Image (cartoon, rainbow, N blue to C red; front, top):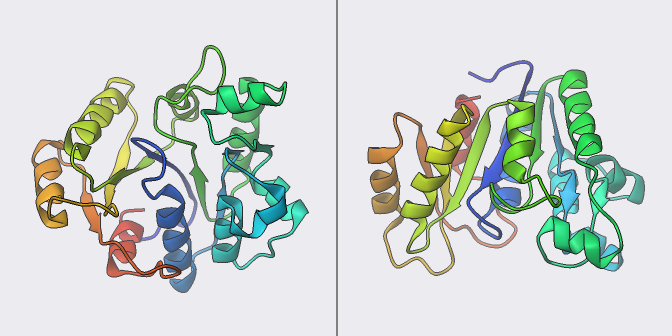
Length: 229
């Protein structure tokens, strides 16, 4: 059952495991189901304004049915950095910092103003540094909203996923679902990876998402995720 008003934070065990792909597919599924939905990716690394149409914010805006225009990108992704580094280092390359209080205030205001379902996509993994003192984990803990944990299907993901779940549990953060997004190089069968994680996940739903052709982000797995919201 899709909640009428709710906010979720989409996080992961690392970078390039499919957060934006999963978020975009979930947006489309929710819209097809008639739900109101919005999405933010407040902090973006590796952002090149000359090819903004291929950026993560552009992927989310397209899924939302909104134009990939400069003002729309700025609305959903205020902190954009060119270097493909951790946010603290990417900001430093430009002589900037991420003001954690401003980031948190921006996120809280969006949650409070949400009319429908709001998806806030994080940056990198759960422990990536935002500044000299705070990580994405601090951001999520301060918000206190449920999480969608996106993980890869690569060899080693079971340990990484269970470590992440343990850390999140220690910080009393609720995980709505774990989504195993099949990696390009996947020596273990997706179903086996899902089953292994599920055995140790403490009752958290674990959903496998096969690798899909480029440009395709619709799959029955998105309906399963949406049903948990």
